[in-house]
Length: 199
Image (cartoon, rainbow, N blue to C red):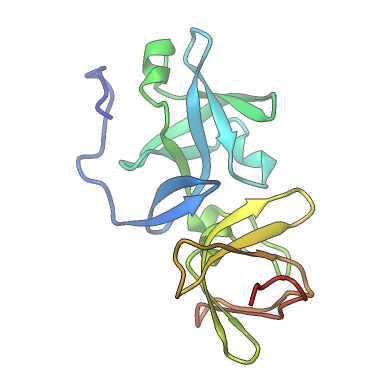
């Protein structure tokens, strides 16, 4: 997407990225950053944008915080924000009208990894889990985490089996199933409850 406003500054080259599938959307996350939201489109005429939030930390969108926008990581300060129908309406620095807000449609919002909120024990960032190998305690490989579903009660890991890439195995992220998450080795060890795996 090329900006139509020549006054908008863009970084000339984008950094290396990792690609994830999150909530059925492909996300190209620059290395060292985390995705916290996506701009759905403009709201009103004064440059406000509607943001689909991908963060469990509400203060992330407080005025005065800074976000990096799009693959070029353009730094923008949050001037104002307010909840609206399960999303956030956000005013960003440098976005003065609806035309400029429209240019940001579909852009992802990032933060530096070191700015991430501290996690509770046995909780993980989405980008840490996606791409991890999954195996049983006996060492049977089940596949790789392709995506995560957020059901409200608990997350569900979507696994792509190694011998059937068109199939999906759904594993609830609960203590009875997820036995160990080893970020260093990139392996999740699970216990299969009856009926979870079709034989």
